[in-house]
Image (cartoon, rainbow, N blue to C red; front, top):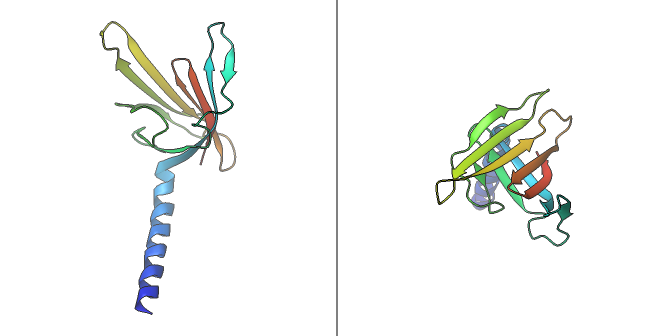
Length: 133
């Protein structure tokens, strides 16, 4: 009986923690994976291992948690999103030769009604799309 009470208490605590944390995070799932081909045409990868994978975005910092993307350092939250604006995060990294830069961009349509908010993640010619809650 004591074991059951402990288990029930743990489940209740974790559920309330998850509900408390949810407003500060996005839980996202990739629905499509594509890249821009040399001719400028978008090529959707049919058997991509990324499709169906999930990741988490910490809203205030822009930190991405999950194995879906290469490690992204020093995120800059450009906009927190609202009823009229998207949530936007930008990452800039210098190239190894210091003469170039890599730029990654995440856009989550916070203004869309309902729980599921569409997102687009752009990294070079890579494009991931899906939804966040």
